[in-house]
Amino acid sequence: MIKPGDVISYLEMCQTEGVNLQRGMNFRLHSGYSLILMSVRKGAPYADVIEDNGRVLTYEGHDVPKQGYDINPKVVDQPMINPSGTLTQNGLFYKAATEAKKSEKRTEPVRVYEKIHSGIWVYNGLFKLVDAWQETSNARKVFKFRLELADDLENVDLQLGEVDHSRLIPAQVKLEVWKRDKGQCVVCGSKDNLHFDHIIPYSKGGSSLVAENIQLLCARHNIAKRDRIE
Ligand SMILES: [Zn+2]
View: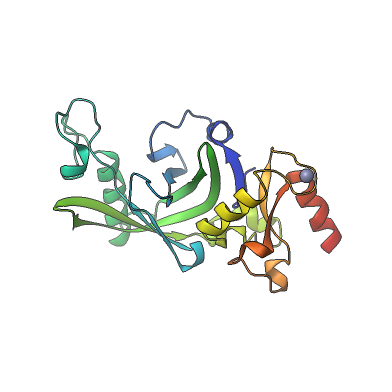
């Protein structure tokens, strides 16, 4: 079971979700939830924003596909509807958010993965899709989606007792730690099942905001450390 803060390869992410993830927005990927892939790296294709220590995301909608258009996708409005008349991913997420706001439907749960390095992803946790709107950016219309961390929905994690606070580590800190620890467990050098670990636990006042308090541990050493602390 994947936990917020887990670092995984692209392949592991696809294995976890049981599908070959080809696109960033995946409305109702599985019956219980939707899934989005985000990035705040320099040169990322969309203007995603993480705020409030990782608890709030503003996710940008997606452009028309490159195929079948003679035009640069970055200069045309992000579409609500496909040429066939069905809703695009933008349209599906937009409809779910506006219906939930009017309390006609439940708030859509969305699993969020963030790219921190080429081929390297972090599971940011389960979020709720709380709002959607269109705005003008560079003389065209883009979609924006507001998502808030859904601690209350992450039942599986809550059952483990202590809530995992690794999700609150900002992206730039994760990337700094990833580079410093060379993408491997600081104890054994393993590159599998890695997790961002608070050196001084969050529950004991350790900070999520500085790389000095965060390290990469494999699952085995993460558990070993937890047992020692408890
Ligand atoms: Zn290890």
